[in-house]
Image (cartoon, rainbow, N blue to C red; front, side):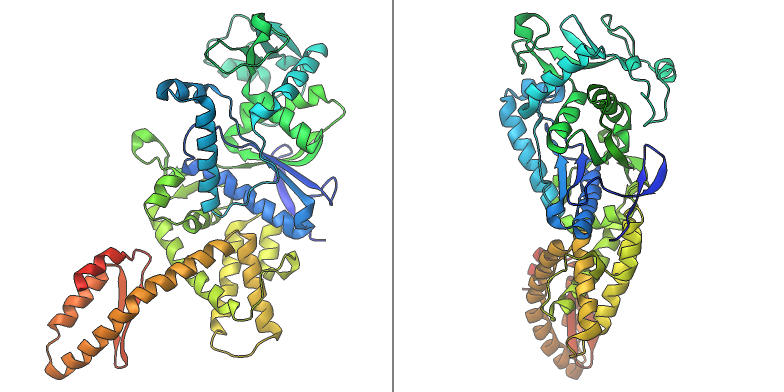
Length: 485
């Protein structure tokens, strides 16, 4: 079986990935807090771990990989949004959850095996907190329950920090009920106007709500067990979220290992700067889709940078992605003539992709290998030989597109390209007739006028002895063709 190497944040080294159970490879990835649209940075871990999910399915089989990504649907940001809008919390979280799924679907992301909502696992969280108290790792104070950070000796190993250094660098006011400044909240009281559930702690039947960190520990245990293979998320979650998850989970289940491999993607920038509303470079996925940036373009730009490197979203990269995707779409069309679907077998990938993807999911290298295969496919497009190496080359291309999550997206792009070309073909025929007449009269004014209008609309115009060919560019705007009528 193919050997995959993954960079493990915990050990700070690249390791050969050996699942606990090859028949059930298990992965947990921290999902969104659903109170608003997902911004471009939120989408990067989705694409990264969707690609890993696809890769694992090709190596171990689609029925042998369990992928869990949660929704945080109880949070102070959600409460604040409800107070501002006057809408019910449940209505907000239901709407924004569907927004997230729709937007990530537009990027070609498969839905995980399980998508638990935090509010569905409150009982499990309460039980886990009670167990931590009983074992001396947590304590109740003024209706809150807090985790004793110093009760877990390995706290800080994931992020490479010591507890004392963390305290020295902290600039936040410490709640008076904390035994130690680093202790973090597992449960907090809720007023009547906030979401709340009964618990053993505090007045009013202990009515309260969980802290953020406990939810992932409870949900991963219920769905994946005490020890599972991979835990993923953005680099910004290493501390404190993932550090706290480890502490809670290892203390309540000391016999278990929790996550064996920790993977973190780097952050996203826009035109070399941190994405920020104040800088005017803040985009949601929905914004870009509405501006005519297709999902495959966003996905391609994400995959063009290795997940452990900072990714810079630029207009230049977007334009380059449009051109490169058009070429891949043409290669896909050439490969389709063999009538074969993508393979589910990792061994059917192009050789270069096998190497790059198995090397810590190097998607940058994988795209280069895929484009080489696409170039070969386009090179044999005019041949009529069916079968043999040509057919295998086509299957390799389709399989590579599938593993990178581009296959279905490019089918849609291909259909859109054909629709755009259908708009131009009648214009090309009419313009060819006019061009032939102009060559006789030597009056090219009307042809020049049409050419300028087409170029303004984002159309490439090629004029030759055999007529005029028109091809839509990525920036093609059909509305601008009205000036030709």
